[in-house]
Length: 81
Image 1 (tube, rainbow, N blue to C red):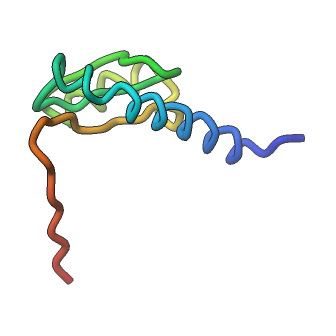
Image 2: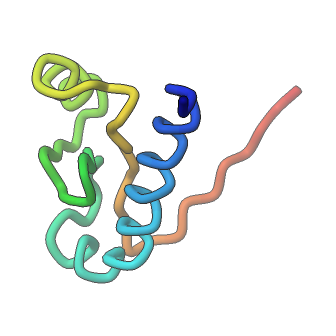
């Protein structure tokens, strides 16, 4: 029997692959917003991450949803320790 964790990993990997493949199109439509991807399609988007997460949690199994920021500008993270 397949582990639930492996199933979730596969679902997220499929969503991530779809997100990367369609990034240029997503930038044209959702630049500066967070998008929620479920079953390889955008199911919601918002400029505010908190609002988006609240809506998505109500409608979808959150462990199977990829939430990513879309931007034509390159995003750089600085980690301070």
